[in-house]
Image (cartoon, rainbow, N blue to C red; front, side, top):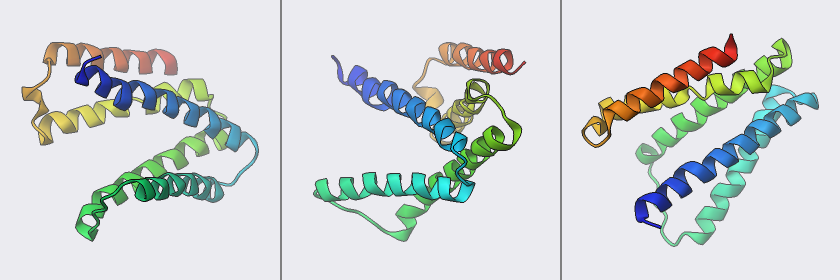
Amino acid sequence: MTQAQLGLLIGGFIPAILFGIAGFFQKVSTNQGITLGVHLISIGVGVVVIGITLCIFQSEQSFTIKKAIPSLVVGMSWGLGMTLVALAIIKYAVPLSVITPLYNMNTLVTVAAALIIFSEWKDVNMVKLVLGSLLIVGGGILVSS
């Protein structure tokens, strides 16, 4: 297995499975009548446990407020997004199988930002990227209609 393949496995395939498990348990949790605040706090505790574990087992630690701000934005945007997903499931009875493909179109936002801000357009096959993006949009439209 090449480094690139290992990177895709570790950073792509395995997280896809983990995020899928997370989506499933989002529905399990909301079906049990948990309130949104407690739902997010419970998720946060899970994230803190993983963070503490990493801090224990990593030999080097690097922290400044400036370095932490982007991570804080990740947490806040993810937390608000997950709150809205839970709200849609709880209040509007949106099926998880329909809403998941829609909120996973988030990849298009990330791809666009990476292409522009990090100049990744220089390193990717734009034809494949555009075709893949069109498939994502098509899938979102198909599932939600």
